[in-house]
Length: 583
Image 1 (tube, rainbow, N blue to C red):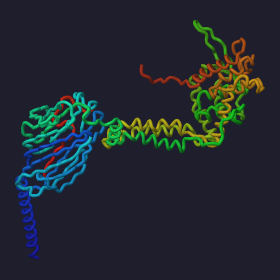
Image 2: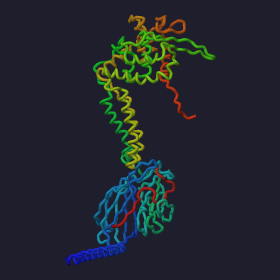
Image 3: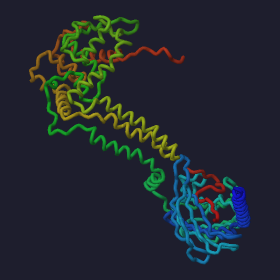
Image 4: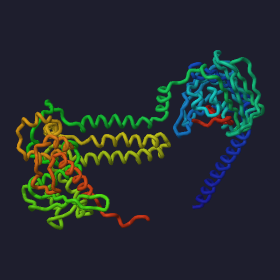
């Protein structure tokens, strides 16, 4: 029993010794790390501008290492933002990584977010100066007049040579820019040093040749400072990208901008499969009577896949023709102008021969009395419009004239179009892609434009549609001489008038009866005078327009209420930049 405290003391001593050893190791590691440091003795760059618009960059970096290091890394910014918030990416391709004597060095290159990284291993990087030479080509690094505010007379290279994200000083920095031999005139050049946004122009500029400029920093660059140059030259030396090339590059950088086109093509494919009528091996033939069993509102709905107000008004006229009501018009004298008063008189109640939507129209007209004026319908009938339309859509769909109710098909696609907008905006905000925000309304529109065309008829519906078009040909395009040979009864005018109104050819239909009719229909009573079919049809059209307005008038609501930035340039601006470090 006496050995337990002794063993416990042993364990405690072991842990204490281990802890002290760890502390000692940590202190030694901190001391070693504190003794390791590096800086750049020089950063000398050379930029060759090619006639095709590409540039070739050579960076000669001389590092001084105190202590032991494995190598260095160099980060170069390749993703930028346009004034419209879009991405603009440089196309950087590494060419070689060597030491100061041209021997290849082990390296890794990869894209890291908005930067491209060279990671280079350097042999014997301990208490010595070592040189690394990086060569790479860049496309899209030049700026042209339409993109360069303040340098409109020049094409230009605006390049952040060293970058301003180094955490160590750069004792000397320079850059040589070589333009094509064919450059006209003397290049325009400006150099800047300092942190991002600085206007410090303490640089030395030399011109070794007519197509070369050499810019040297006039002082040491502290951590966070860099060397930036702007070189401009007369347009015509370097090939400018075409509009098509710029557009394709823009889409490559901002692929969400292509989503409106992609969605449009997708919707076109959907429409091709689901939004077209079946093809029938027959053409339109003139018909002298409406398709069997189809009433005016049904004909009007089938022809344009919508229940319009004129279809409902045509049904009112058709109910009058069939003896359910009479239309009476009288002239009301006014101070300046006379007006027409319209009264609807019920002649018989709705019966089983009427279709549901017809019964609802008749009940809506005479809801309170058997004799009503146009004004009586205002603020009352509007409540029935939705139900009447629904009954019409249901009837034609149940007769298998449509694949699905046209109104619901349109609503579905309009809802999809409406949902695209917030979804694209959310994606843009979540992914940090402004292109989504720009593409959002156009993508939504790409869906919305198809919504109206998505309803489709069945094979039966397509056959009926061709029959209706044939009947429309008879009503609207028959010549008077041809019409006289048909020997149709006098009642044909009033019987087919509702169909002509639903199909929008009432005026043409009335012209065929000019001089043939001398008395108005029995269901109409109006101002006395000689009857004329054209004037009567015009009167019915005006009455129908007024009736449509009255039918849809609702009560008033009670709750109302009485390029890129340019200019002179600055340090850290333009393309390139970044920084680096050692590991």
